[in-house]
Length: 228
Length: 228
Image 1 (tube, each protein chain N blue to C red):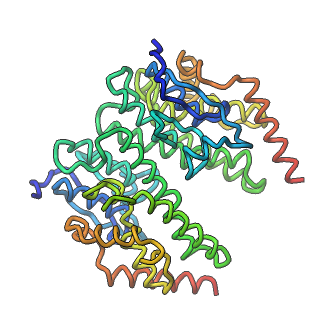
Image 2: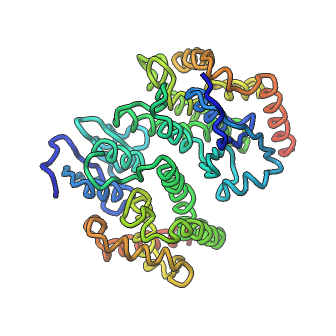
Image 3: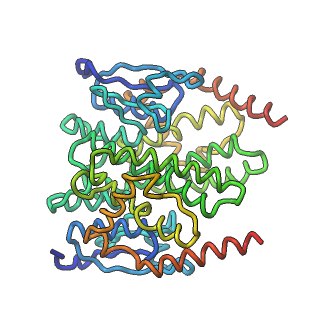
């Protein structure tokens, strides 16, 4: 059930940003309505510069004129602000919450940078980055043992944070013609990815597949051209 | 009041680590007793490798055999686990909590790296890093306007996270003979630093001054020698 629009809630986002899409999934999970404002990252709006003067980055959630930036921070805010609305996003117990936060940082600080470097890093560093990416994904995959989702029986905070691995990585792999996350090497992550994307609330908040692949094809061509 | 030791709580720490000291301050604030285990960072203990297999870094808080790593994650855990014990570490309201988390990441992802680079980065990059460090500190300083502490009238989460800026930076400045955080350039941060260090719970959980300065003198000499 989508509630009546909070007259003062808006999200500054970008269609192809996994960080921005995390927030969209969380808002949908809680059944919250909001105004969505698409940013042009080549030509940032005065609003983005005003509401995120430190990083100038999406996503920014603005409620009653007060901005919150950084996707992980926004996810916690949404869960706390609407904590009486099910489902909960973070786990309920302190130890499980701590574990989820630890792995969320692992995804943002280790997994994503190593994956991006494997595709866009200096050519002579891509192979090492790819190895590192595989190691990181293997480390993360262990967290799925015995569970359907990172959050347990249904998706939660860590699943949302891992959205890049479930969808964007596939689009990049297709655009680049190079595979890291295969069914053979990462059976649990591969299964998780399919289950995650099959969730209604996730599916409705993913960028269109063909457009995303085309976007990455252009980025990969541009990177190659700049190295010529 | 220090409570009876939790028989199963221990902290793997390092005397000179600001991250490790953050946790000590938080545990002291809550009046919690624990066993402290000093790590030898040149020769990491099997316990550290077991309890933080991903990063092999201090601090790690272990309770009932279950480890929690990463200082920011541990601070939130302590506040949630003992949320009925005053004082609260994080603010109570969702928006204020989000703001504190945002600035905590700013300190760890922007301020600290730029400061460390200004002292230990490649020589031809130190000047730019120093400028960046000043800009970052100026941005952070604005958060102190009209407040004694980042947390308001008394210290909280963000003050604890900023402990490096209050104490370690001074020791580094003294060891290196180069100043970034001066009273003239950063009047609010300078005043905050003095107030923060004067707090009993902080004072009791800081590394000895002379030892810390000597430690950094050795590190600075070593960095110089490696460049000769």
